Length: 122
Image 1 (cartoon, rainbow, N blue to C red):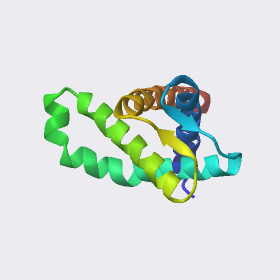
Image 2: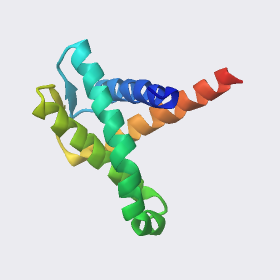
Image 3: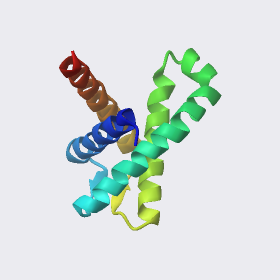
Image 4: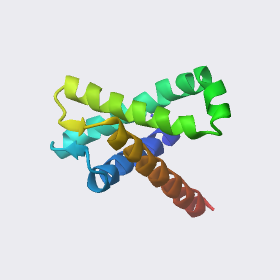
């Protein structure tokens, strides 16, 4: 496994945990192993779909000065919840609003964690 994907997977999992804790409407009721699988699903969804969707919606992202990326993050978080439930992982995103705020929390967590990892590498 690529080291950068491993970091992103770990950071994404941390973001999911923090979003579960902070955002009303995001709930996780499973085991630690199921959470690791959920974090892997989240990492794969972001690694595979996000670049494609960002490219396809590039005009919207530009017109909205990047705001539409928050909408994409919310949609991908909702998709992660749906895919997780399909395989029996109890991760719930109750509404688009919860997904939107959860996406913001996950993005901020990722930003902070990436800054910390980069600082430690120096």
